[in-house]
Image 1: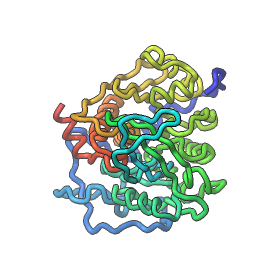
Image 2 (image 1 turned 135 degrees about the horizontal axis):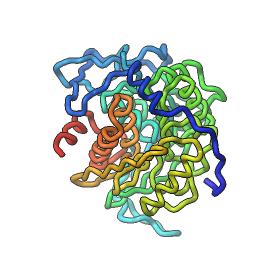
Image 3 (image 1 turned 180 degrees about the vertical axis):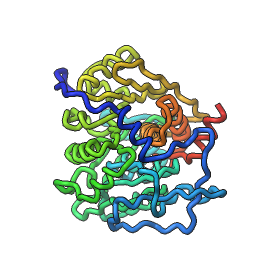
Image 4 (image 1 turned 90 degrees about the horizontal axis):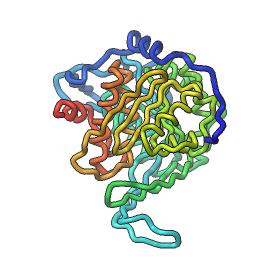
Length: 384
């Protein structure tokens, strides 16, 4: 974002609306007392649209089978993720090629991914009712993504297939130390959207417990969703990952929590983010835009939640036994924070829950395949 940034009026305080959500939309889950949830007789959801107010059910049972399978109706207001779905083409290399250089890859494979789909599957794997609103092409990559979302327990009633555009895809260059570089081809994520979202899509947003957005779909879609959520009193988290263009002020003023990593924060504000002091100054610039809370992902330094007018809350990383692939770590962190938030946990608990989920994520190759089960996250938290 350029040096001169437009100021907007403060939004409704998140604390007021999140408290309302906690009282009227969902029940809290204790970190140390996980409920085993089993859903028998799983029926795969139709690709056709259904009544957006018919949310999934989590049926208490003594077994732990089918933890990530969606079913019928629920008293919990769901996590609704509106965003991208990609086929991630992985190539494992020792190092990035220099300009004009060709290098050989050790292996290559295609896995389902995309920031939106990653976050949706994370919600499903954490046993929280989750809906995904997005677009795929009518091709093999689209089928791969659809199967991955269903396998992760995500409701795909609002996943649209478009014939005019291919499914979005990305080339992920994975180095031996687990770090990665990614090139994205937007495809159906960026093209073929209707000028105005369908009413049933917007109704699903309005009935959500929390909404997750990213920047791998058009800003115009994100703005429609954020406005609908704000008008319904539903909290919105915007993951800043994706397009490197400035975030429209019209979008920011309808967002409750902005979640960038260090490099995204630097790009958006035009400020240095090497030290924590520099990060704090860059966050202050975001506050000037009307965003009351900024959740910064700091890689190996952990994370920090900045609430305007309050001291930041820091969370160290939870050390992974071995880092295999960091591709989906940020998406896992953001989605896990959203799940903990909508369940009524404190901000400190939300950060800790998200850190544990991200720690498990980086130990598995691939974005969607690395999303951790809820029980694994809770077990890790209880062990440290």
